[in-house]
Length: 99
Image 1 (cartoon, rainbow, N blue to C red):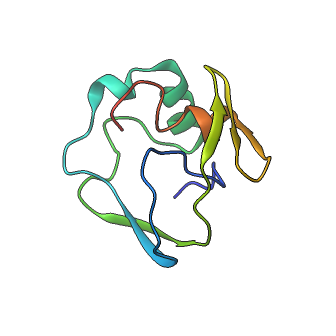
Image 2: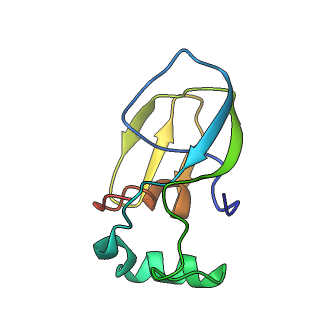
């Protein structure tokens, strides 16, 4: 929703391609919001845990590809097309936090 990532890393695969609605959970994960990286990312866009939208569709996107992660470590992952993902793309939403 904030335009911070081009790739979503996750453990699921889907055959679906097309539009997706991006929504937030009804409950804000306050533990995740206390993570320094999350606080910095939210603050960059004028948000804090107190004013995050909850239980709403906040953005949309188009799912075009589903690529397998073939190698990963604590800082990066390599996708099956050879692209390396790092930073926000790799860390969030999966720094060991439930977001």
